[in-house]
Length: 355
Image (cartoon, rainbow, N blue to C red; front, top):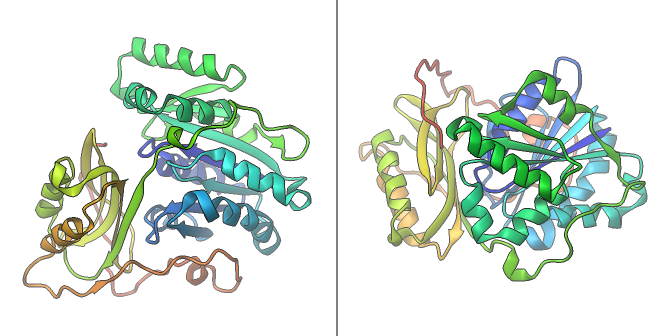
């Protein structure tokens, strides 16, 4: 079994990249996706489950304490229960990948024969700001990658893309650096991601030395589930409030909401926000906000205000954490994603701008 670990800072495009990878692989491989989410309400798993039924999501309020170990323990369990050709792990953007690598090494023998590939995504537009804020964290993640994917290259001049590519290769000269837009790399280059791998136990993990705690981004998360009908206009106004001081320092927000027009996906970064249509049927609206000094009460009240006043405001609290153990059985139920028959299919023709 080949294990693709996909890393990258918040908003780098990991979910879009995995969706593209899954669509390319599923005709000829059986693929399982394992999502590590920072928070008790997962968004990425619900989106990825539209492309493959084999999606498992692990949520954790402390990515530094338990999530890496849970993900590592899940690898042999998934291998025995589902026997996939490939396991894709989406690793949280604020977590250092060396935590997962250390957990894999500790497990030792059960993971000896798995081929492991680390693909690291970089947001080309946000690279300079992130490097200035967390240079050690960023370089340590880049240095541990087998493949580098510079995403959102369409948003920068070619000269700037070449400059960033050169800087990435200076940190990790042994990793091929691929350029991508919307999380999609060229078909020929995608084979590099698909085929490049190493044996977990036979090749040591290399990279920059130990980090201080201050070198790793320190964030908290707020998550909640909702039932009811949301207003798209109010959700867009909410993203403007995220940029202000009243909500705290919001580094990332993402959600799935049910509106009169159908299901929509919310993506927010300090550099911009977008509300885009999403095909699929989901059981509930949900949101995840990541940042520091979050004003949880104000965020919760602002989300309530986005509900239509003439609709019931039945709200579920922050959902229960997804199980960190694989139980078998009905996969869509085990993994927390089932199709709701009472939710309509949505046919979208509109296009949207991207974060």
